[in-house]
Length: 326
Image 1 (cartoon, helix red, strand yellow):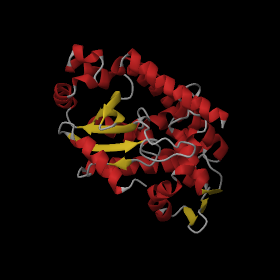
Image 2 (image 1 turned 90 degrees about the horizontal axis):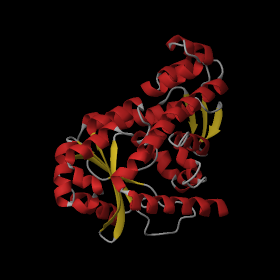
Image 3 (image 1 turned 120 degrees about the vertical axis):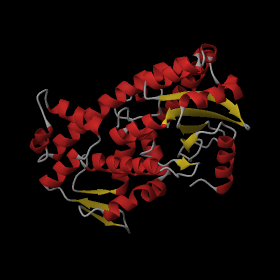
Image 4 (image 1 turned 120 degrees about the horizontal axis):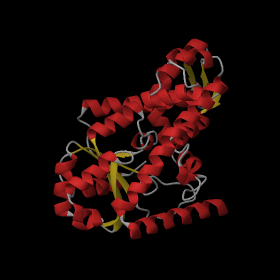
């Protein structure tokens, strides 16, 4: 849980940026403590959802030109094109000294934000939001509130399809947290192999707060709150309903995984076998994440510049080796 002083600190940082941010949230080890990570000066990661990327970048470039790499010389049109047309629809400025700490902030249009949360088009920002984050701005936008809720429900549904009839809360949250890392090439080199486990173990109470409303209200789930043991209905009709409720991009990937001529009706055939469901879901998620992680990382070389990219990558590799040594 983020204490009030840190929350005010995050709010103060966000307030320095131009108007037009409809949602801002902070995430990562610079916000939430992680087991094995005792540093108090980790970079703070932010995401800003903006209603008009061109207008926002114009103001931000004028206010903080040093935040941008050589892309600043190419102008706002180039920055917005890079943001929207390559990768996962988000543009990051990274390793920015700010108020005594270093920050990284990503800008995404509201349209692309909603698209990723509803459809899992990139499973990038939507994947960040499967895990606990600290919302900075008030959510007065009904469309955003609804999309945030639907994204959590989708993550729960996908995880349930990959789990047995009876499991622990820790099992569930490991599945959920791992979705956005499946297929991520950075997990091969550059990320701590124990990252998912650390995220869940360090923030178990936050995960429970996030998903308890969905678990407790589902007629197909029995939750023992005292020991957090969960039992789900494995009936074929329930399984088929869960499959059909998956976000559009994942559903399409699952059907392609089943076979080139498969259709929505093909889901009935795999609904009787949860292990088969799990295999196709993992394959579908991996395809989405692999594509977005490669293109987004490639874009980072342009948005951050070569020197910052090397510095950022080096710090990631260092964390990876620390994780392996432990």
